[in-house]
Length: 510
View 1 (cartoon, rainbow, N blue to C red):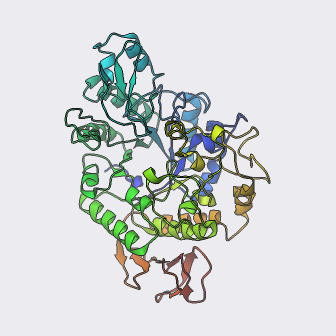
View 2 (cartoon, rainbow, N blue to C red):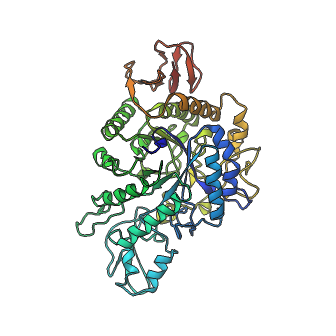
View 3 (cartoon, rainbow, N blue to C red):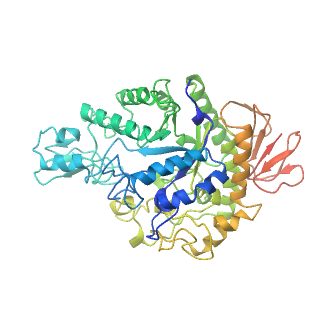
């Protein structure tokens, strides 16, 4: 039986461009990441997931991949990536990388070959070229079809710089099998599959969404699973965004993906009934399949959780993304700390987005001319995009760049982040950084994979016990609640009031 480390792992998401800058050019890189590996080991995580690190024109933050078998020069070299994998393994940290199978970059060798070739040629058959454009809309806004000089049109569900692969073509299947082997052979422990549900297209059904979750996509992942199973202890995790839990569960069948991101929990409002329903439904979906759930509060695509939980509407919807929505950051901070203890106590694996452990808020006031997300430009500058959660991390010091590097960061950091640097929080026992460190230590010993038993305390309180005897209690109501009978308090997200748990606070008890 191969090792199943992912079932209960704490996985830290590294957005490389914004993590740590080792050469002073304003962008994070492998040199910076390698220098901060001791920080990650000290934090207590089991694995890191890196967003795409491949050569890319960066039309969409690296998700427009020009070459799947090399490293973007801004980030470093392939040799450095191999050294990073080795050094991470020496610290018992697994490495998960992003693979983007739906589309490539217009700068890729395959697409350049297609542009140079005739309509109907084998090179064009790797993509979706048509004589007339269809009426599908891009997920980033505008048409999903762009014209090339000879008059044909090609499909791009995202930006025009991201042409979609034709997954009816055996060459595309063979290419990605080779890419997976390339990285597994270099010691990568897992693959995160971007936009996993949209690979297969149906142009004839008349459905404006005729590319989401078509049955044929499962054959792709069955073949990937067979390949991954040739290597010990390797895992596949899918980015699967849709609300139908029954359809979602099909990706987790024993011969498909090992895990998939639980976006229902991420998008859930900070309300007891909604959270209880989301958690219960997630556990019910995963249990019959023997698949571990994943718990995610934030990532590189959504507004940071401190800001989200301080708003009147604490749910998340990509379509409702707007700047300038008022947020009570003090309230959001308190709720985010409680949510962290809730997520880490649940059975399965947990993902932590870089900066979450520092309690970073969303940066809403990035000047328009500095924004780089294609959502901003393609929406006519009405949708702010995702830059606000991608601002480079503050490590130390009293002013920008806060130890991120020596050059000016690629996105501006707020001056008031001086209180949130890793250095400032390291010595503060009550800091969010130290809460995460303590929680991750306890989690490694007492939590992770398994099941839970709900406790019925009050309608606005979530409470459950895990196999280790640890009990998690979260008060989502307005009034303090009395703690259930217990031995001792292991950890609390905020100060307790004697034997009472204040509003928007979580506690771990034995």
